[in-house]
Amino acid sequence: SAIEKGKYRHFMQKEIFEQPTVVAQTLRSYLRPGEQRVALPQIDFDITAIDRITIVACGTSYYAGLVAKYWFEQFARVPVDIDFASEFRYREPILPKGGLALFISQSGETADTLAALQHCKKQGQVIASVVNVPTSSMARESDLLLPTHAGPEIGVASTKAFTCQLAVLAALAAHFAVKKGLLNRNEEAIIVEHLLEAPACLNAALDHDEEIAEMAHLIAPARDVLYLGRGADFPLALEGALKLKEISYIHAEGYASGEMKHGPIALIDDKVPVIVLAPSGPLFEKTVSNMQEVQARGGKVVLISDKQGIEQAGEDCMAVIEMPKVHPLIAPLVYAVPVQLLAYHVAVAKGTDVDQPRNLAKSVTVE
Ligand code: G6P
Image (cartoon, protein in one colour):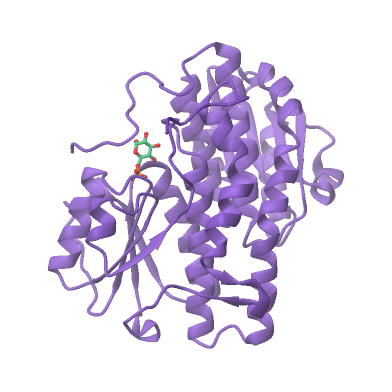
């Protein structure tokens, strides 16, 4: 049956709002809530023997992989190498014996990613893929298929596929940590509990839709926008900038907060809005001091944080968006929502073609 927009104006908007449902749906196949355990599909290789993971993807899927790098290293203590598929193929990568190669793709058909997968297969890597289309080429060629259950994604700019990828990758990182004995039974239960809270937190983030629609008018006239984040939220800054570029055609850059002083701070004046992603936690103070460097140069900040973070640092901001207080493992999922909504509403304010932005394709099957 044809997929309809229903009460929504655009597919992208509908897909943003579907996230609590599809993330819950995806998590159901990776968690056993009753037993408070992570439960992955049958794996027929020894996970504890894997001492290096190579992640390869393109576009938004690449940013999901970049978040996962932080998780795998932090929680499972497995070193991760990550690359854009188009770079990976031609840089003659050195692949470790017994390594795991992990491919992330909504469509499962992106030409560069598929070719990288085939290359790794020839080199004897164990192939795992996180894909949304279970009948796709990548799904068929993988040793371990980790499906996302986002349902068909129509909007060219990926949204719900991204948060579902993060859900799978978080469960996978937790699974590695459990198998390696880094999380005991009790710690595993706590992680599962936090993951199960994700859909409710996504709903809480979606409650800010109208407020973000109003705020979009402050961003729409800008020529350039900067996004800043740290740690696992740094890839969210990249994803936020990508979303804005894709559908509103405003030039945007994502930067690691601490790297800003090495270049992009030169761009700052009162015409460059700066979106700061800063959940309260161990990295908060550092991010805020970078934010203050921006404000000291006249930069107009939109701070996305939780109640505590906003109370502490929201005062001199042009606008704030309050997220629920969340565990660091699910912060990237939840903080994806405001950056998606912001890009969406800026595009609507500018009157661009949200679902079919110029020059872009949903799935790129040529090199
Ligand atoms: C295209 C789409 C992006 C997507 C990228 C990777 O560029 O416009 O939204 O992130 O391809 O696609 P994949 O299907 O491999 O995730």
